[in-house]
Image (cartoon, rainbow, N blue to C red):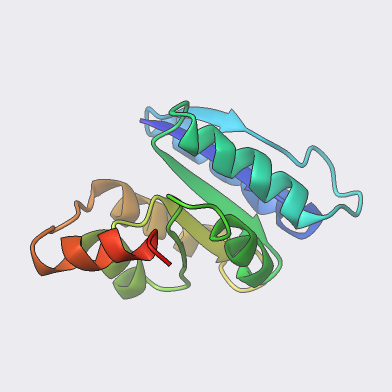
Length: 143
């Protein structure tokens, strides 16, 4: 799977570690930055990564900032992006099954690397259930 990864300065270290993990799991990783721990603005990077998904260059994305809040808000400004901010396996599972999330957002100050890896494993394998959830997903881009 083609997965775009992105972070601000606060998420840089976790992003770098997760790139290695994703590649070891057989995924093609597209890194949209940031490329250092130097202070930066998460909306700029979230925008670039969201467009990577919307242009069909990646199926899904992993977006990281300190809490995950800012970068998930920035991602969700894009029609067609469904970023789910998660910090546990149950939320990850339902973000795919019920919400068809194409972006997993997380906070580097909240989610440690071992949990982040488990969350990603779950998120990649889960499928959208469709059914009653489909009509709800369709409404997201109407408003």
